[in-house]
Length: 116
Length: 424
Image (cartoon, rainbow over all chains, first blue to last red; front, side, top):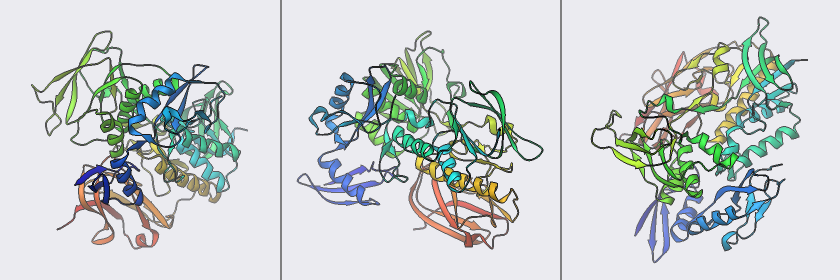
């Protein structure tokens, strides 16, 4: 079976064609770089996303955060709701971990901006 | 005291990259002026990822990209003044540039510089420019304003959202509002194609099942004090609404993502000529405007889709401004014109001084529509200088053509960039 998808690894947005058999990607075409092939494989078998949102600080200023690595697509809402239930103390440094192992994904949430 | 070699107006990605490059090229007497209380400009509210793949070879969020540059500016001891607004820019009789600023520290003062780099960025096209009929209730925002309220101020702006325009900020905000607990019913786009990047359509709409209605627009806004809903209709090939196709979408929030306009009030005041196609200055290969010693880069020159392209372009502006200051301001040599031909909406630059041109000259442009399986051709009279195949060209993605200096040497007066379908 051929599955068509658009690569999201960079703004090129290559149109990929992936040949899938028994839940396995056999070949990928249409990509301009290796990331396209990797994306097609993971997107079909286990799609992941980097989640970005804000976390409230105790000073009432929102601090931008992200998942340090991409998490399973199905875990996006659980990830965001755990972030929304948490608050952080200022000051905070860019790259500082604010939540460990968010939503049992094994991935940490880090601040993406230093806020005094 | 108030004299500088170089003043950079704007401390966003363009201004920071330009200042860093000028400093590296030997200009120590410079000043960055920024109206906000932090560096970074629009990047601070762009908390999503996707920045920096070209510049840093890794995927960063907007604030991270901004902070890396801000750290470099501070490390390099580049002087800057935040919370300072430039009121006007003029050229004096002795060819100095007069930059009048206002801040609580200085009051109103005029600063002088040998060269100025314009890096003021752009602003959103507001509702008033879109001619949407209906009331003016609370709940109608430009997408970037909503982004600022949500991401920087932590404000909850609405629960039921319709977005007009599929520009990148609109797409990003569709996902952002969804993650903040709102329901986004639809994104309506007037054109038959999206003006946003493909990856944003996949990541921000498809992931969350948000419909993208191409060739649709908002034709009426309901609600007198508070927004109650909008009517969305199909449009024909001439972008005119088709009667009888109106569908009512109840909503408390309408976000407008309908284009960005370079912020050039200062530029015009300085006597710089503006290209009506970009709403940015006409510049040459050095990114210098028609006013000697005034350079422009980033979104104030032409709206970019990638910050990495802004940084690269601004670095060139900084280097060229430094060269201008160190070598004196003479602009001799033969200048040729760059024309936008078939399928090309504009080019930056519009003219190239062949003698001053660097080894590699960038010609950046956007296409007028969606083109599949085409060649981009650069021609002078009957001589073809360059030909590049492309599977797909879309207006939302800027094209960067790089041409070698030796190819330009024999050109008389004009080169033309155009798109041609590949013969099968």
